[in-house]
Amino acid sequence: MNNVSLIVYPAADLAKAQRFFRELLGTDPYYAGDYYVGYRIGELEIGLDPNGANYGSGAIPFWTVSDISASIKALVDAGGTVVQDATDVGNGMLAARLKDPSGALVGLRQAPTA
Image: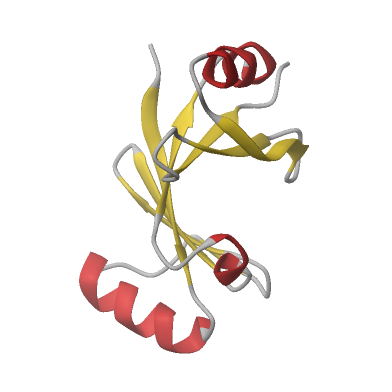
């Protein structure tokens, strides 16, 4: 079953965004780097991306899928448009971004395979 497992927010100023999200979420990030800051809240990850302005001003939900290539194809066949094809974003984690028929961004991610 697919589920939303990550929501990424654009964060032009990571320091300010970290202060805000630390207060909002009541916890420190599990990872804080120059290119990404991540928080875990139960099963959900909240990410801050300093390059997020490159893909719009709002948050992007990322759905976990078991086969990212098949999911991209199915969503394109259903009227979606690829914005970023499946890309290894670290340690074998694959991520992709698409636009739905109305232009809203949707992310997909596939966990590394063993």
